[in-house]
Every structure is written in structure tokens, then in C-alpha cells.
Length: 343
Image 1 (cartoon, helix red, strand yellow):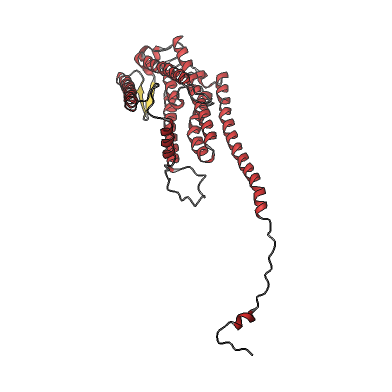
Image 2 (cartoon, rainbow, N blue to C red; image 1 turned 135 degrees about the vertical axis):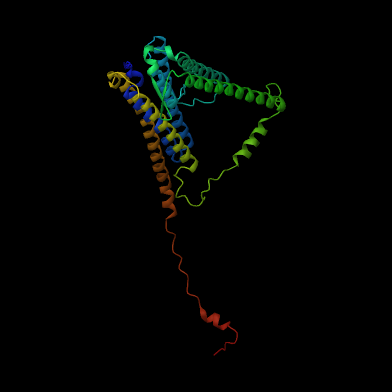
């Protein structure tokens, strides 16, 4: 007997998936295209807005999945789909504005928020794979739930598969903790060695300014000729390679998720468009507005530069008064030629 998984279109509906797919694929392409044509400040604002759109949508998806898990409304299949979608979006809470310098209080608060979100994500993933055979609202369908990895369908309750994922998570956590410990130890040694503490600073402001001046003079050439400006609006090879790599990874993740959906028996209501799916589609307008604003800003800046250069060019093109030179008397020169005779 085939076990039909109940529909949950607010988590993995067509509109939700279309919005996430579009946003994840467009993020790498737009970042590469905007980078060479926009100024540094405009580019930073655009990247912050794009990261905020991705991470906030991922955070909303994570909170929705945790809420439905607590109320036993989420199936194992939909939980796996949520993890797959979160790998495309990322999870976080990024502000669109810069809002000045990051002080100690602001930095501690942001790190605290990141720690809470990371702990919630790790706890959610661990709970899914530890309780996979009995997870969710339809535990009778968990044994037949398929998860496609590298084009191979695997039972989601397979012990080897579950233990492999848990081992990878534990190794990543250990590596992250070990990395933070190393960074903290190096920071403490550096501070103790150079005497950087509040009461007696050995590194003065003049030393910092001198170091910044030295580093500002270091330039890295990309192999292009500085005289030829034909390709100055083209992205570098590194950016193009990064765009292709990121796009291929996202395409692979999207393809695996669609294969996972196609190899499981879902209810007919899964394809129904709901209120949440329409909202997810309209959230893409925020990114479209950011792209339009940065493109229009570049057009305005070019027009302003042309308007400023217009009077200067007119002043340069003013004709100077013609200076008429009198004809030279060659008779005097002939008299000075050696060997000439006076008639």
C-alpha cells in the first residue's frame, strides 16, 4: 500500500520554491554584474540588501518549520525539503543599513543573535535525523520517504545515511570550536606581545596611520592593461569563476530537491497556490527594486558628470585670437650668406 504524504504548501509549495530558486540563482549573477559597474558604497548597500533578503527568508522558513515540528504538523519529507531550501538561502538576521561604526555593545548583540539562530538550526537538524523513524505527523510514511543525493534515491530512515550526516555535523562543530579557540589564542598572544590594552597602549595612532598608508599603496593587478579601458566594465575572471561555481552548486541543489519531490507520493493539494506562496513571490519585488535603484543611480551619476564636464569643454574650445606673422625679409638673409656679392 502506497503511503501518501499530506500536503503542506506553505512550506514546499510551488510559489515558495519558485521564490527561493529565483532569489538564490539571481544572487550570484547580480553580485558579479553589479560589482564592476557600481561604486564601492552602492555595491556594499546592494550586497547587504541581497544578504538580508536571503537570510530573512531563510530565518522565516526555519521558524515556521520549528513551530510546525513542535505542534507535530510537519512530516519527515517536508522537514528534509526545509533543510534543502535552507542550504540555498542561509539563515541569519542582517540589517540593510550600515548605521555607523560597530561598537562593543552592538557587536555583542549581533554575535548573540547569530549564536541563538545557529543553535536553533543545529538543534532542529539534529532532532530530525535522530528521530527520523518516528518524526512528524505521519511516522507511518517515514520508511518510504526518499531523499535523492547525487541522483541516487536513499531511504530517509536509513541508519548509515543518518549516522553519516550526524558525523559530518559533529566534525563541523568540532572544527568550528577548534578554529575559534585558535583565533582567540592568537588574539590573546598578539595583544600580550604588543601590549595592546586599555591603560598603556604601545601601538599609537601614528603607527596605525603609517601602517594604513603602507597597505594602501599595495596594488594587485588583474593582468589588464591600464591604458586600454575597453574592458573596464567587465567583471574579472575571479568573479566570473565564482559566479559559475555558485550557480552550478545552486542548480545541483535545486535539481536534487525537485527529484526528491518527484520520487515521493504527495497529496494533490501540494500544488495548490495559497496566500503564503503569493506573498513569497511578491517579496522578490524588493530585490528588483534594489537592482533598479542601483542601475538608475549609475545612469544619474554619468549624466551629472557629463553636465559638469560640459562647461569645461566649452571653455577649452574657445578660439584663441589669430596671430598673423609678418613676412620675413629674405634679402637681409641673402646679404649675410657667405660668398654673396653686393651689386
